[in-house]
Image (cartoon, rainbow, N blue to C red; front, top):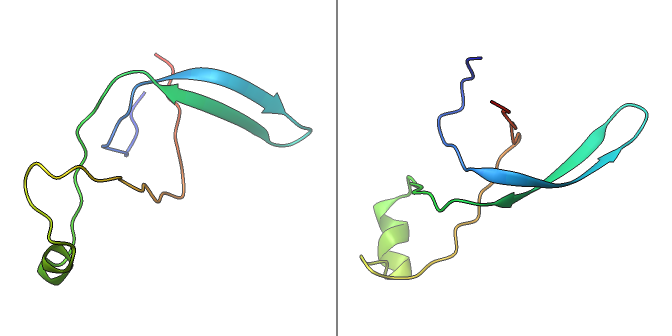
Length: 69
């Protein structure tokens, strides 16, 4: 199966709640992964961001696509 999303996070299904039309599946991330962000130089400077800093990544996405292989 091909899919267009490039960033992947390996996860384990922790719960599934089903309704008549929609279902909510929750996941636990099981493998560390590398991520990247594009931001303005002004933002990097305003945060004082430098290599080695610990940061929290807030992932804003419209879809999380589970793919079972």
